[in-house]
Amino acid sequence: MIGTRDLAALLQHAERAQAKVLVVGDTRQLAAVDAGGGLRALQDRLGAATLTVNRRQHAEWERTALADVAAGTPAEALRAYTAHERVTVSDTALSARAAMVAAWWGDVQEHGIDRTLMAAVRNVDRTELNHLARGVMREAGRLGDDELTAAGRTFAAGDRVMLLRNSAAKRLDNGDTGTVAALDDGRLVVDLDRGTTVTLDRAYLAAGHVEHAYAVTVYKAQGSTVTTGHVLGTGLGREDGYVALSRGRSANRLYLVEGQAPGDPELDLPDQQARGAYEQAVKTLGTSRAKRLALDSAVWGADADQLAAQLQDTARLLRQRPASDTARLTALHAEVVRLQVQVGDAGQRLDGIREQHEQLRRRDPQRQVLADRIDRQTGALGRLEEQLTGVRGTVAAAEQRTTPRDAWDTAHTQPLERAVSAGHELGWRHRAEQRAAQAVEPAAVAVELPPVAVEASSRVLRRG
Image (cartoon, rainbow, N blue to C red; front, side, top):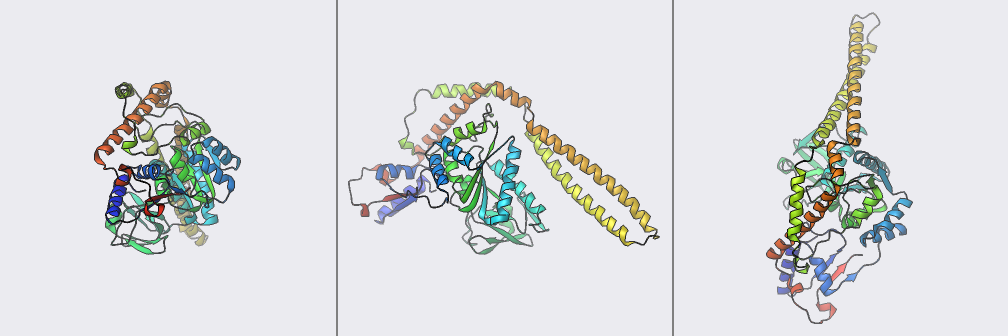
């Protein structure tokens, strides 16, 4: 996932040293986060040796389906995944995430926690999946009692974590995963999957360089291999789908939401009219977001003014859009967690009082005192459980009901879809113009190379 600027610098150093460069990659997977397209440009100009056999996925049908996804023809692939019961469709995003975590937990128990993986395109989904998975771990007794909170995240012994920052001094790599072995005076002792144990100090933790790794973004999943993979379909484009659905050797499962609006994660615009789960999956998985060199892009036409005008019209229209219920739902989810903790604490107190009551002799005057406490505590526990049931019902209703904002979005579907297309096109053009102004084209791309022997030229090896 090397960026074009770094690739250009590498090729220039190699040219000065008269060294051969072997570039290995797959243009059908996700490109670098920064300016990309260099590998594709080299492949177009120099050709490539291609690996054509998929040795990761065990089932032949899955290898064929994955090739369909990579080729941008996902309809046949989705039919194959569905026929082999690899697709789960839920009514809401919340129930889709819950189904995904439940299936992941089954694989954890069967294969081990480091042999299964959940992946999502959006960070908001990754965060929620991690929250749900950690709750399952806590309920199963897989996490230690002591906890450490740093940068808004809570860790305990047994937690799966990912490191987000390189450190040569500590021999840490961005993307390292492992399991928390112990808490040590505000520090985390982590057994990394690559076989070493490291201690993460307070400064590293406070900077937010550690996060939970039960679920990761598709970008972070690229390069990993597990036994089973679980993929949330929200926002899953062609390159995302090809990467995410190829992580598991034995099985890869896709989770879709019925009637979910398409949207565009790069644009701050409301979702559009809802589509069926399979219809939306075919549309998004068939959409490529591959990067190109700015010099390989067409010159912009005179339609830029028209596209900008569409965005201005939409901006004026959005001022009439009703407020979102997101903040209210966030508060309700927090209230559910708070009440769950209180119910658990109240239940433990009640069990303790009952145990004390049973240990006293029949005529001991303290028995009546404890009996009264049992009655009061039982009533308090019942009231908390009623509150918890009520808040859960409110959350479920809020997730499913049609809000004023939903109705407004449905009524303005066409102009919003046009604005999404216009914004995406203009944004891409703007980024390409910036890259063209900043980047220097690699020498191996800029010049017309004469025919030379294969052994003496730079070659590109692309994984199939």
